Image (cartoon, rainbow, N blue to C red):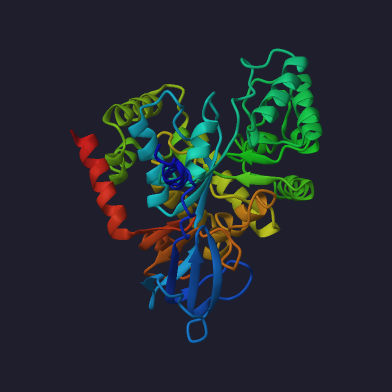
Length: 439
């Protein structure tokens, strides 16, 4: 009989694990680096990335480019940390796969490498897994679970059970919507503290801003609760009352996600002709754009629309944002995209212009989407600044964003978790998306 040893050896070779593929190495050479860690911009730097980590940052004359690395010539360009959308949304699992992939790509195409999804759906954690493993071009995702609201919670006991269930399922945080009673909210907050899971979002009317701060709500999205607390829908903000509530916010360690541009749509201070002319609408499904247009037209034509009151609220929100920023309140970049005329990724750049209009400096604005986000997620990963050991989320620009925050749109490419996309790559995919929706 023939020996079985050669056959056994062959089977062993074919079934043995493949040797681990060496992580890709990329070197950006000659750039001006904005480290966003308190240091001034660093000229003529080389940034070396291996896998999903930055492994070296230093003067180009003294920082070697590893053999075999992909070399990106970056002289005359600027590198900043990737940006974040801290109140974003991703499609639920039952949405068409192509729509999900497009939404995630639109974020990345605009330099957004981190998204905090603020409305979870059953089964969505699998998408987070795929995205964070790099199986699809996507930002790193952190996801809130399904909403705590007046319909999903009917008792303090149910609120407590929901917190424990979402913690066990693996959600990154809890999302608060209007409608909770104070006992329900308090049960959620106490259980969240015990289970060590953060929560944020809206301020239910029965709870109120000051109580939410006392109970440890971590983020106040849309600056929710503040205009109501200060009666800013009825009058100009009282300076002393505003200073007091800002101090309470800072002392509580709470974070603010402003979503200024969206609120201008919702309060009717952005007219229909302006928002329907946004060029980025070509990247959204036609029926979605039609729905947005119909809703905004109805809003603007409604007899209940008080444009003077809406203008007062928006003006007061701008004053409040500027005062918060000056006082050192922790602010996070966010837009609530996709939402009415807030196209994923593109909406962030409209938001930054509103922050500039409020009086924030380019450095303050840039920090809200980089260093501050890294601080918020410090317990999960290291990112938000440019240094060895940080996650390799980078934005290569052709103009200095500290000279003009609008220069964040002048991209030469985006790196997300070590994956490099040139601007040519990005524009090609954007053109494909636009063509699909034009059909």
